[in-house]
Length: 284
Image (cartoon, rainbow, N blue to C red; front, side, top):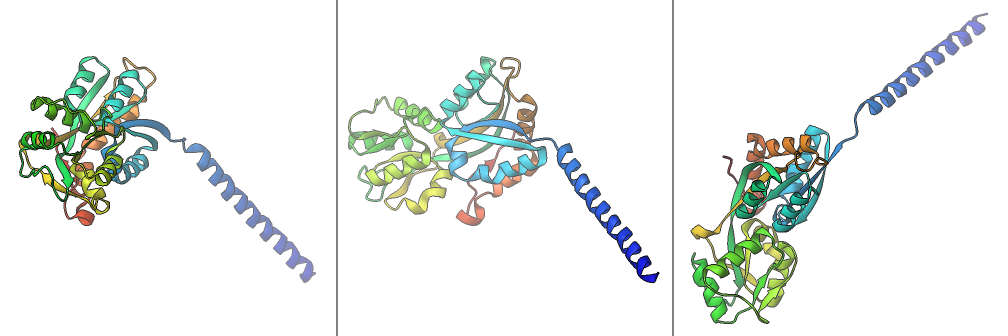
């Protein structure tokens, strides 16, 4: 009798355990079903934000806070702006102010806000064949042209390329010939080519610092000039003109980038590894 009671009690106990496990598994399954799939946000941006590692720092924070998966397309600023004009991206992070303003004027972009800045620098071979130095970028470009030294250009309509072309225009020089080497690639790859070709190159400081240890033949030769500030803006692609864009999360991304918490992350990024910030907060 006692034996039968024991087995009966054991049987009931096992049923309770199985029932609890079943409920737990069911609850977990329901929880998974209730959590919505993350929305996709297409970010078109310049290669410097990617090559410097800044996006690797920022995007996981945004994605976790908003249940959004960001698809990053890192191209030259010109290409990023063109994607915005075609409605092929949801939000843009770029650094060519004049071209950005044109996109706002056409109504293809809205909610444009200043995010951060660093500066452009001129890197060149360690033997400095063009004998350039100081902070006068116009004089440096003239010396490079007069001395027929190698100059590596991105040639990709990026923000850096636009800045470089503006400097050539300012000194009334149209660069050409074998010494003017166009890569058609991003900043990191173009720096590597300049290193191989022993050439001069205009670059943003963030990518330079991130790549410097691999650029054994190059050094900074010109920096600090008033014409070398490099300003980044974020903006939404206009949902009223491009109705397929994810405007809800694009607006969240703009606000995220200019929030005080994100600005602090931007300002501190790079200090531990490079001894200085790669970007500086610059909200309006």
